[in-house]
Amino acid sequence: MATQEHSRPQRREGEPEPEPEAPVAPEASARKEALDDDIDTVLDEIDGVLEANAEEFVRGFVQKGGQ
Amino acid sequence: MSVRRVMGIETEYGISVPGDPAANPMILSGHVVNAYASAHGVRSGRASWDYADEAPLRDARGFEISRALADPGQLTDVEDPTLANVVLTNGARLYVDHAHPEYSSPEVTNPRAAVIWDRAGELIMLEAVRRLQNRPGLPGVNLYKNNTDGKGASYGTHENYLMRRETPFADIVRHLVPFFVVRQVITGSGRVGIGQDSRTPGFQLSQRADFFEVEVGLETTLKRPIINTRDEPHAVADLYRRLHVIIGDANHCDVANLLKLGMTSLVLALIEDRAMTKDLTLAKPVATLHQISHDPTLQAKVTLRDGGQMTALELLWEYHDAVAAYLDVRGLGGESDDPHTAEVMRLWGDVLHRLETDPSTCAADLDWVAKQQVLEGYRERDGLDWSDPRLRAVDIQWSDVRPEKGLFRRLADRGRMTMLVDEAAVEAAVTTPPEDTRAWFRGTCLDKWPTQIAAASWDSVIFDVPGRQALQRVPMLEPERGTKAHVGAILDRSPDVITLLRELDAAAG
Image 1 (cartoon, each protein chain N blue to C red):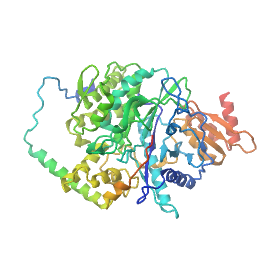
Image 2 (cartoon, rainbow over the protein chains, first blue to last red; image 1 turned 30 degrees about the horizontal axis):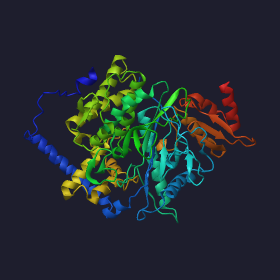
Image 3 (tube, each protein chain N blue to C red; image 1 turned 90 degrees about the horizontal axis):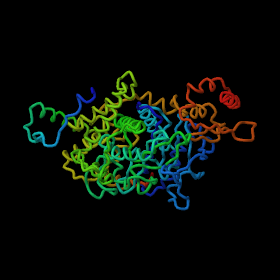
């Protein structure tokens, strides 16, 4: 079935787990750096609009239960 | 079999007045509804709700509980004139439900349309916020498309699916419970805080999971059940049941929202066709629901009643593969067979695969992943603990409907989120109904003759015809009649309601 060929990396009982602590390849670490830069841009953006007094804002968000 | 069926989404929005946590949410919600309705020429006295066919205490298991035994919170069909409740020209219902403004989308026939009319609801709520901001004497009100205040209160985003009445309810329960327990790995909107009142610091996948306490039941406001048994079809009761799903989170991401409706509709189709052969019954569904939500690594194993163990993703693959196999065998899996079904299957497999290999690759597609990425960014950059109010503020403000304040909207406007439907379609859906359900008749009549409609509901429109004593009720118990194809010509050639009613009578023979 076409839908399954590309999709399922089946791990069966007894098969070894994939190596957890493989050394990070250079491309992967570059990708992580780019991702971190990207997140920093997002955080800067959010800093600009996030409620200045977070504690009071959170305390003030009180809802009655609904369905 | 396809993803097509009559469906819709109801969303109760969180409501608050900055600086005034004690403000009365019922009155505020009334202001929200009235602010929108009055600006569009809909008066609460007119086009109000027809409650004749509502039966919130009827139970799908076949009994009805007495009003005396019911918690007052379960009584949703008692008309209170102080509470605003209107039908809109797009076929939706906008009203006050408990202490929240609620937008119930019109009936649609596919997940893509469900996403469009659900997002139209966000624009309607945004407009109400803007109108209240500019009204002297009224406090500014903010609205949030989320499901908890993180302090113990939750409010719902419900899905509705029309099903065949003949399908045994026990089959629905058996096959849907495991699916609902695990689908949150795709549909969860993310939440800061563990436990109903967030007593344990941390992040979890779902807004709603911690508020579910039993497997099956009629309640929606307390002891919430994974499967809600409310049996109020708003349609021919002998033919249809409306499955009222209360376990979902409000989604902002198109992909998550589309998959929520699409996966569920396909699993229901499997159940209706008796094609779900595997028994995936869980040993402890409620505890497992919480466990999965509390594990953003997605590595936790769930235990089936037969003793087998698998991860939530593996369990969701079982449903995916059962649907894929069934479509394949019947030759219905191709793009040309039904593009809506093909789109859902493509995204479902793709998202599962990416969640398995690296969940962060789903940051543009799934609410919980997007939110977690931002929260983890803050934690790393500023060294924040999960109990830090800034993280809880991010969680709440994420869903503010105002594009300048809502964090999801900020990210989306920067092109960081996958948009499956375009903004123009959403804007059009604010005022126009879907063409392929009875919502088309309801919405179009409201648009053409707003002052001559005394009331409307999901399954009726009641006309107040000039010169006639009695109100004229047009029942609409077939959700796929009253479409543009069905009655469009009649509405086109009816200059007034009297002609319309005569033409409808003649057409009915």
